[in-house]
Amino acid sequence: MRSFRLRLALLAGAIAAALLLCSGYYAWRLSVRFNLDRLDRELRNLGAANLERVVGDEHWRRV
Image 1: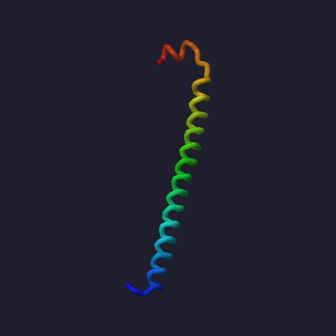
Image 2: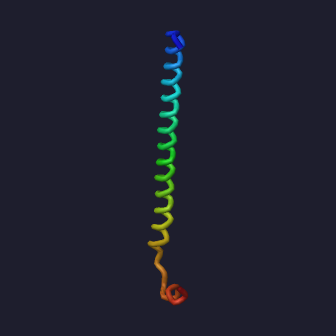
Image 3: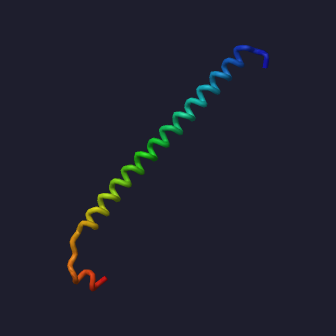
């Protein structure tokens, strides 16, 4: 592999592939993080609605 053009093309390809992989991984991590944050918010809203509900004595006797 003595050709300078071939080495330069391989180096450019390797750099492009590395950049694509890194940016894809970063986008995937952001997507996971945003989805988990949204899921946490929804669960917190559902839980808060149930925790703030006032129940009477009949409910606790049944439980």
